[in-house]
Image 1 (cartoon, rainbow, N blue to C red):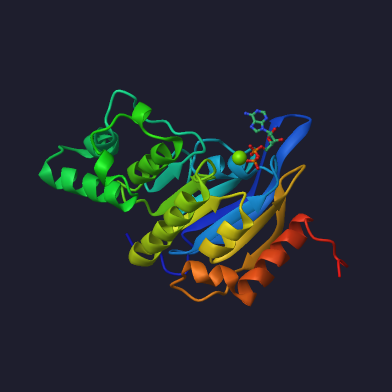
Image 2 (cartoon, rainbow, N blue to C red):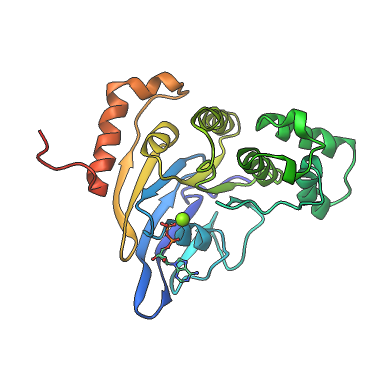
Length: 259
Ligand code: ADP
Ligand code: MG
């Protein structure tokens, strides 16, 4: 499945949405994501980040505008998109391994090869030792990692992540960020990720979209020209600090004439 040449993998064209007539959640928003690109979306709470992601994933119809994935108009959730929400939606009566196997079962017969793939995905997210554990026995962070593994089963062209690591402790979060980077490098995984952590966005992304609120709209596209592969050490670099400050300025967290 190669991208049609010259066509970005994802095109969001003048997409807007209002849940109620008086309060538009999302103003017309337009942007593209290239094949293999990692884009992070940051913005204050209520700026329409989740709304935008649900529209891209085909879970919510926009009031206006269109979303195109690899040249095809999205009208329902496409198989090529993997989604990780803020809240986990695991099957409580299935073990971790069985939860990862579920999307495979929907695709066809499940044998030793599928079991190996599922175990490899559990290993990827650090849950190799928890394959036979039920979701209720997992911490919130582990459950979220399980959801990530399950989202990767179909090798999605586009992975949509909505604050997936928000509930995790800082060290687990850093580890998962490194794994996400490894995934992106190894598979050239295209990712659009919503996060409320500016540092996380700069660490992971090729480009950061800054959303403003009432109604949600793009305030800035900030390119992250930090070399890859990246290690945690990049966070201490001057370039990193400069980009993070630029994003804070767009959001309004830094005074223009602060010093
Ligand atoms: P974010 O993810 O950036 O916090 P959301 O996309 O969840 O923002 O919400 C954008 C705006 O739309 C907010 O004002 C929110 O209150 C409103 N909103 C979100 N979901 C619904 C819904 N199901 N019904 C009504 N209003 C909603
Ligand atoms: Mg949200």
